[in-house]
Length: 252
Image (cartoon, rainbow, N blue to C red):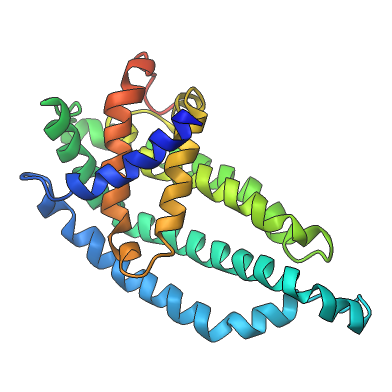
């Protein structure tokens, strides 16, 4: 539990870090991107909420029983819809802001440790491009491997009652992986190595990811969450994970 709480605090530290000299200018573009995409997520959620709730409401139960259970089912299904919408838009926002997030992670690491990640020449970047593409495909495959069964489960009557809890843990773990990709990627660690490293501090990662997920649902705060989470994940890496990295092999 101590690691879980500490992981949550690293997200909060991101608010302070993005305002530090040498860092804040890298936070502006991710904030703009996040504002536009989350505004779209909120608009979509408001407009489609009633339809999705209707589709999730069980029709196979007797009407009297369905009405009696709705005080339990309605909050569960509402949470499920919110988790899916905000998780999906979080992933999309990170993809769009990825080039700027890498620079932000580099600036935060330099601020915290007085050392920047190793620089690559243009030719090294070109040579590594196929492996980086493969790394992104591996990440997408990993997400789909879990997202598709969870999405199907979410629409199966009866079984969808446990879907919100499963989505909560999956989303928290995925967001931890997603935001740590920037500081770890700057050190040329592939997706497999990133997962292995975060598993050594799973409670820490889940605390960070779950707090990040919760913050995406808070109005105004969710517009800032990308640079805040990138900064917080970088601080967590520098202070808690770097000593466990053991010079992982790049992009394998």
